[in-house]
Length: 66
Image 1 (cartoon, one colour):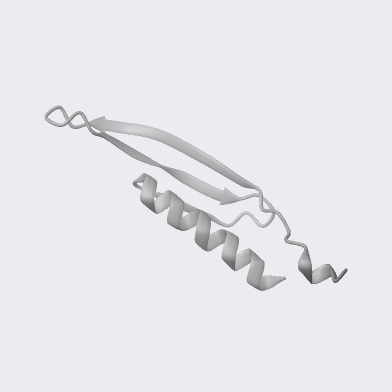
Image 2 (cartoon, rainbow, N blue to C red):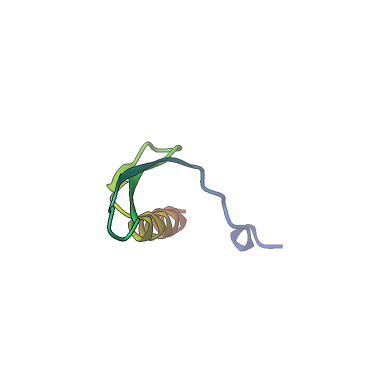
């Protein structure tokens, strides 16, 4: 088998916190920081969609470097 067929895994540290809650809708504001453990690259996010986008981008960036 070719070594390129194997995908390397990523390890991320995610710090997540709930911020203010909108009293009218009850919606919680999420925020936090995601860090790739191997190289220390980190980014802050202000909602859960940004977290998902960051994880996808960091994982694909790591794949391209290999």
